[in-house]
Image (cartoon, rainbow, N blue to C red; front, side, top):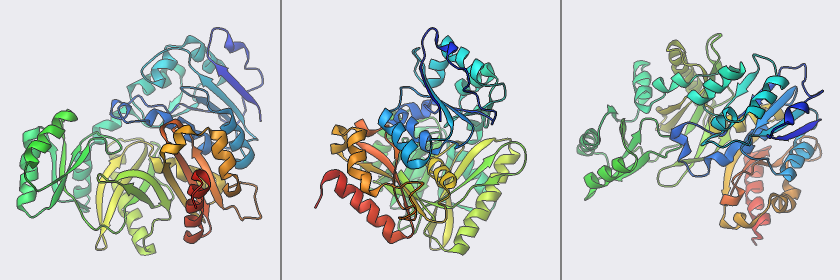
Length: 434
């Protein structure tokens, strides 16, 4: 493996000799430009998760907002087998509100990328907006997906597509254009017997524009305040479905060359808090084989409808199960949190095991360096070359949010009991619990 760290400045473009592999290169740039994501706390700190999920052969070029922790890079090489590929890390020197803008504002980075990789190189991003498209066009990169997906990516459009396909969505209303529309829709659901409803902004990401409301005094005022807070422009109101059995998520890729490509799944989302915010995923989903087949069948049918609309790139559909019925909740026309966990499992060859990706949040983590986390967790760590433990253990998957008191981990285990053991003991060894 040859590492080339380049902090973009005036004359770095002379250092590229011998780096380019004859296996197709890929350029990763995952800090987010989409305005629906920029306001979400710590989301720009998720860049390092791609380091665990990138391709294991050929040339990988990462463009990050800042240089990753050197101890983390050493860890992934020693424990995860990323020591046999050419990798380059670039960090723009220019300013900007997001990564694509910083790259475009940095002539040295542009020059370096043009010299290092050929036209047609794949450009891998978390979500695609106009800035990512402009950057790909400037560099002659191939980008799988399009900013125009957003036209069909709203929660309202998803409800329409699912109903057209003959499948179930939560009772509710879509294409609401004003706070008054939201209040009228909520009133109709409350009058019909709903105890709680959820208001969702059409393009809100990661539950940032979702909120639940009870049928109690003051609900109209509360909804009005919420709509003002999120600058509501369009969205849906749905009955909150209680006592659900599972929250499966299924994923596809539309590459413009054929029908949808089915990804391994379904996964079960780990949802926490009153708003049920995504905190990780488990594979396989805790549903029967027959139900898993039906989720995949319906999901594939829905994906075909997006394909017919001209959507390209990765997409995923979230659902809930209630009394054995699949109720479809929303579409994500981008990579999702599950994407990275799934890609890691595929590339490590562990999809035959239990694979959990989980967020570990604790205020004490704010005082930890990655080196300290590594030292404490070392007895529990997964290793791609560790045969005596049959490839079980903890993967330190994303450490970008460590200073925020959060670390994302992947648990690989032969059964659910072992997975729960690793999760419990990780918290004990990190926080010296009894």
